[in-house]
Amino acid sequence: MSAPRSPEKRQLRILSAAFAAAAVVCIGGTVLAQSLPDIENGRYALSPVGDGVVRLDTRTGSVSTCNNSGAGWACYVVPDERAAMDAEIGRLQAENEKLKADLAAREPTVAGKIDEPLPKQDSLKPAAPKADAERKIEIPLPSDKDMDRVMAFLERAWRRLVEIASRMQKDLSSGKI
Image (tube, rainbow, N blue to C red; front, side):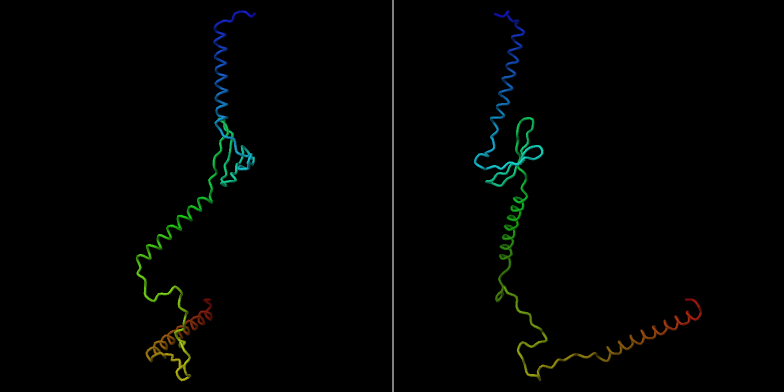
């Protein structure tokens, strides 16, 4: 048999055993509390990345990044831009329908209104063919007052042009240019 142990050593062994048991329970508890990925039936597809794995849920299409932090493995869902865009499209469609309903409630319907635009017609062309005598095109001519204004403008412009040419000729002959 062994020699009787001192009470301090006995307390130290009990205390270390308690710490070891607590550590096993804590580690085992976190391992048991975390559910393992359901890869047996093909729900998740895992791909390794630098510091963890990327997990694709084949049922819902959501993507998660999984990392091993000090407390254990944790997976975080990656934000899905497509879901955000679909939500925004749905919101805008609902708003559009509401605005259309509000507009329809405000405007009374116009009698004889059609959805299709009317065909374009040339205002100079008659709607139905007419006889050659009726197809005359009348062009309004300018009045005498309009003609006098145009002639006065042209005369002033011509005089200025002639003055400029004569000044240029004088400058060239005198050596200024």
